[in-house]
Amino acid sequence: MAAQFGRRLRRGATSGAVVAAAVAALAASQAPGVTPPPSDNASGDRPVGAGETPASPDGTATGDSPYYTDLPPLNTPNKPGTSIDLPVITGPAEAGIPASVLAAYKRAEQSIRSSDPGCNLPWQLLAGIGKVESGQARGGSVDANGTTVTKILGPVLNGVGFANISDTDDGAFDGDATHDRAVGPMQFIPSTWATWGQDANGDGRKDPNNIYDAAQAAGLYLCANNRDLAIKADLDRAILSYNRSTEYLHTVLSWFEYYKRGTHQVPDGSGPLPVDRSDTPRTTSPRPTPTPTTTPKPTAPVTPEPSPSTGTPRPNPSEPGTTAPSKPPVVPAEVRVARIKDAGTGTLTATAGGAFANRPAVLALDSAGRPVAGLGVRFEISGSTGAHFGGVAKSVTVTTDAAGKAVAPTVRAGEQQGTFTVRATVVGRTLAPVAFSATVTERKADTLVRGDAAELTATAGDRFAHRVLVKATLDGAAASSVALTATLITSADDPRTNTKGPYFKDADGNPLRTLTGLKTDENGLLTLPDLYADGEAGTFLLRLTAPGGGTVTIELKVTAPAPEPTPTPTPTPSPSGSTEATPTP
Image (cartoon, rainbow, N blue to C red):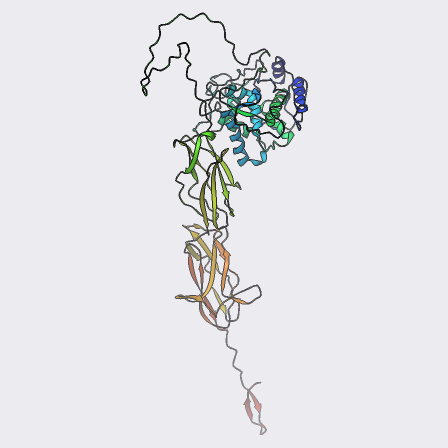
């Protein structure tokens, strides 16, 4: 594999040493902080490092497909401290990124920073890889949903100059049922896409030719194996896992640093194309040059059709002096959206530790009230609460579907009771948020029963031989962590606290006839503390209650202590010699 890959690279005009030198020059010309990546060898080949775990079964996302090797200008687009989000076409052409492509990179960064903040994925890294893999989806040649106008396919991976990867998708993505080919703007081979593919634009499909889907998948792939891309070693490993070549590493890093210095948005379809692929001569033109054609024969003039709205003739694009209508620019979802609104979420209520039955949902609309698909919506839990979106996540980014709807994952309540807020906002725009009020109520039990059949008796002035065991259930299932109250009541018809009879003890040993703060265990069971009997004998009642209506009343029997034995008189002799009975002292 290494030998084959080395032969392919040596056909390119740009060596790893040249790229490293260019990166060093970029660092020297207004790019502080750029650290030239390590060079394993001069040829540009890089074998799998010792102990390095491939991120996918085939080892790389692209199958080591060829890539563009041209470099960014040595002069960075902006000076330190200037904006990296310039809204208009300005600056060097190479610093421009097509609108939909740029939106896809930024959305992927936002989404992954919500789900995997420890990865520290920067969108500029996705831009660097997208530039090197496909020239930013061939200069942003994508439709309104972010799908490339034509499929982007790498060469056949048949072992001739590249990896030899037999077909894994029956040609579904790459049209080749014999060998695999890298597909789409981020150049995933089908076997890797099968594992990492995403539906980031909400159209119900995981399409490697869609820039939103591909950028999200690439970000997750780079973050695999718990990488922290803020660490240089992890950053290098992530890039090399995409295409195992040191020359590739240098080239991506050079664009990464270039884009970090500044970039701007350009209309889709107008982005510059890169010059060289690693498997083609350096002289390849970025765009096809027109070839001379024969002079067309004159054709009969076409009578313009009247416009249905005005009755005036439509211009004929074939006539001199007329201009064919240009294709309207693709406007990113973040620009098109005018507002978001509640999509019929309903009441958000759950018991402590339980899941909310309803899920927060919003609808994204443009200024005409039409749904906006492919929009990033961020749901965030705020306020003092232990609620979360599974695990410990307090925020998550969801993409609107074809109907413009974004639905948050299920919210799970913590143990803290009370009200908190789930807030929905549009990623990349400052629009009025949608706030959902959510309430956490205490855990409930609808039934309480004795947990055993032990007789609860004691002698007055003594301790009960057995403790009270109860079981709490809700809808027939064990109710865990339910707060119970135990009270020694006056009578079945009078639930006031009894002032005599059995009692518990507080921390100082004083009598206590009401207990609060008791909680059932994971099996819904609760064993009460020791009970003591005072000097009163009789039958007494202990009542336990639970939120949700569960209650049980338990009899406690106290018997009087056994009477002391009566003294028996003993005879004593009288002075006359007779015997008289005298009580025994």
